Amino acid sequence: MPRTRRATLTTLVGRLADGSLRLGVESDWPEARAQLLALPGFGPWTADVIAMRALGDPDAFLPTDLGIRRAARDLGLPSTPAALTARAAAWRPWRAYAVQYLWATDGHPINFLPA
Image (spheres, rainbow, N blue to C red):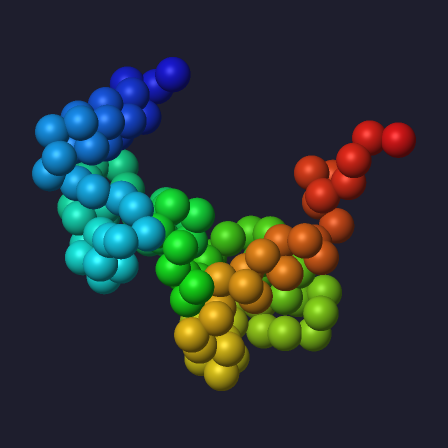
């Protein structure tokens, strides 16, 4: 594991263990995102995945995710992050559901069980 990734994970675990970072459905979503983004190695994609999966934020959105962009393109939606974000404004406050749908419709092999 690269040293920077190890530092990211150990910092996250340390903050969770000492209670200075709390991640759960009771968390304040904007505050938790801001705290995650302040950690070394955390960017918007990671913060929004955690918001969607761990915090239960129904509006977390991942417009830079390659699978999301590819699925959006294949469905005739805008595929650049800015244009997709603008289009997704109409889906608020349920954009995380759109993320799940787009991931599921992508033709990536991870979406198919072995025969």
